[in-house]
Amino acid sequence: MATLVGGLVTVGALAGTGMYLAAVGLDGADRPAGMIGLFLAVAGLGVAVYGLVANRRAGRRPPSGEHSSERGDPPVKQVTVWGSHGFVIGDNAHLTNIRRVDVPAALWASLVTLIASVLVVGAGWLYLGWFSPNFAPNYRTLFLVDTAENADPAGLTAVTTSLRKAIENSGDHDALSLRRFGGECGVPGNTAALAAFGTGDRQKITAAAARIRAGGRPTLVRGIVEAVEDFSKPLASKARQVNRIIVVTRHGVDACEDDPTYVEREIRERIGSGGLSLEFRLVGYQVPAAQRARLDRLAAATKAPRPVHVKTAPDLARTLDWYANTEPVLKGARSIVDTLNTTVTQVNTAVQAIVDGRLDVADSTLGQARKRGGGTSAQFDDLTGRTKGADARDVRDRAVRLRQKQKQVIAAASDLLKAARDGSPLDPKLALFQQAATDYNREVNGMNQALATLRAKLTKTHD
Image 1 (cartoon, one colour):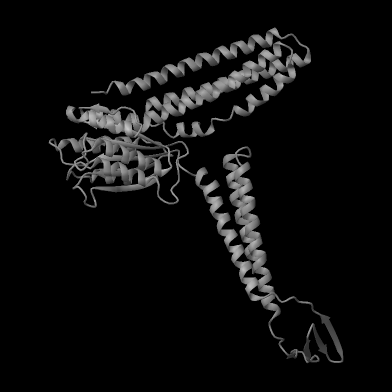
Image 2: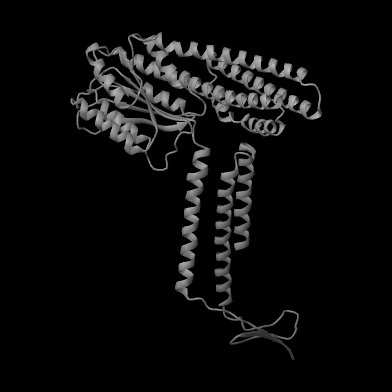
């Protein structure tokens, strides 16, 4: 039985390892592979100990006595003497010496406890060090919505409608959550989580948003504090790229906390105690002018940009969608451009070394550039999951072209290095490299212009 269990553990772990390697490739599997090896070794050790214990117990079983076959053969009699075991068949006898070391029960219990502890620690290490980071969402976004009473009852409808649109357009790999604030001071329920973090739960969150009803007074501070706590729950997966809270409020003041200094200190302490890197974005919808300065101070306390204030429902929808979906596209594209540019800079250094006759330096530098060339896979995957809008698709397509241009630059530099080693004239290959570099730079300029246009769309919605 122990052998069967060990085989199943090994086969299951190897199958999981194979699927993971197929997903991330060998280059990205060094650290996880080491953890998997440790887990397999510990699991194998546990199964081995289990087998020893089982065999030891089997060795303690009393002899079964005398047996007769059904064919009328001579009876078989087992004989057990201290240190020996044998059997007699008719006039023939066979004796086997047995040497067994009896281990005290307390020592066996300690050994089994140790193995169990190692298994638990190994499994925890594997989860926290490999499984959780590698299967974590790219973005974890919590929408914090003001549901307090307001002079304009239709305002909440505009908020929930804009929220549903932003959620529907969110990235495929985002984990989304929804929380509301609004109620009475000091009363449980003046803020509440309406939908827990989940990936692919757009319909559940939009349904929760549709059920929101207005009531109570604005409890913005309590909402922010509890929203921070939502990111700090045990075994919660941190986002691979960004953890963020998007606040949509119709009030700039908190009905229960009238000391701005205390409010700012409380929020900073809660964020710091969470041990997380959290980004805040504040959107004010029809917030009275007299309350905006307080909201500005709240944004400063959370290290967020200044709040964006809007008056109309269409502007609110555009602003919320910009923060929820356009901003991640900008960040992802900017990261791709920066990474590709760094690689091209290395290629330029290698080309200069070729021209100077330092071929060994050129070869080493070009090799480093080739390895960096595939360092944007995660950003491309995230960008591909955000192509629900025309702007996002345009940025994705530009990023794909830019990566292709970069590959052509690397290939042209490699051809130049080969020509230098062969002793061939460098001018033809150098001209091809320069043309590839020009094409790459043209594509970079186009991408930068597209990103600047997207960035400017937020400012057009300001009140």
